[in-house]
Structure formats: structure tokens, C-alpha cells
Length: 134
Image 1 (tube, one colour):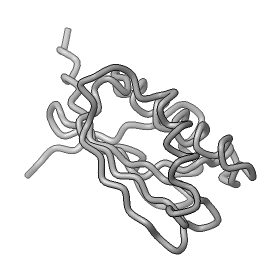
Image 2 (cartoon, one colour):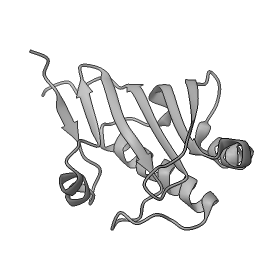
Image 3 (spheres, one colour):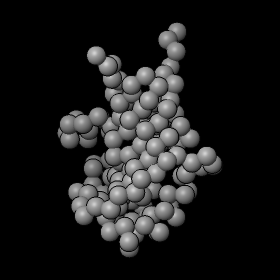
Image 4 (cartoon, helix red, strand yellow):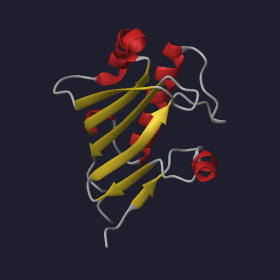
């Protein structure tokens, strides 16, 4: 049986327990992060698109940090965008603030019709070495 370790960002456990999913699961050196949206602490969406994208990345980075990593450890990215034809360029310009230096992770962008009141979601897989027991 595969051993899965759930990773929680600080202060968000109640939101994940309410919605019944894990924010991230570590399996060996791999970290699988659930889709992150631009939600405030109470789960409500940031109303403005740029702020929503920034909040999604901030939420993602909090999970990566809780696992001992950063966006530089990300190897695969999937983004979901409502109405990508109208929003992609704007979202991508904000995302570049968080992207870092080459080599970049792989990316798949998916256009969707609904994201529970959000316009953007990002999920990633990262390779973060597990902490060595003392």
C-alpha cells in the first residue's frame, strides 16, 4: 500500500475539511497539489481577475512551502480557465510574476465553463525530497 502524507498550508485546514479533500499529498519525493483557486481564507473568491490569479498562486505557494518546497520544485502544471479566449493573456501576464527562471515546468491549459465562481485554477506536481528523519 502506498503511504500518503497530507500537507496542509497554515490556517486552511477547516476549509479543506469542510470540502473533504486534501490540499496536497506527498508520496515519496512527489507532491501532488489539488487545484488552487483565488479564494480568501473563508473560501470566497477574490472578485477581480488579477487579484484572483495572484491569490491562487499565493495559496499554491503556501502549500509548497508547508511541504518544504517552492515553485522552483514544480515539474508539471495544469491550469483551468473560464473563457480562456478572453482571459488567457491577462492571466498569463500575472502568472509570469510567479513563474521564476528557466527551465520551466510543463504546462497544460484547459478551457472550462465553470469553476464554482472562480475564473482560474492551478494544480501542480512537484518533486520535493522528503525530510530526512533525525
